[in-house]
Length: 81
Image 1 (cartoon, rainbow, N blue to C red):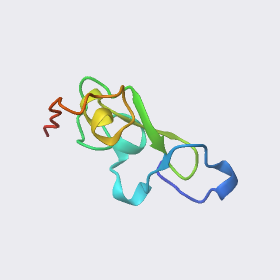
Image 2: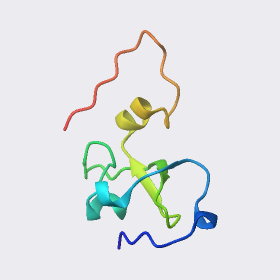
Image 3: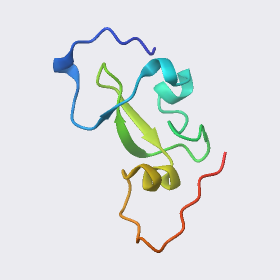
Image 4: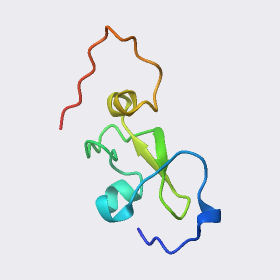
């Protein structure tokens, strides 16, 4: 499920998440990798696991980590858990 025995050649572009720091739901894309939100299901790719599987986040968290649409500097962004 969250096994990480793949080599470096399997890693694609983007931030690589440590599967040990994520829950099983986060590893499978059923929960946001940042705030653990399950509904609505996260749809924005934030990065990958070492085995190349994509890690997803909700829109608010994607904006916080810089993976979503650009946010103006004077806009407040909140993440709730």
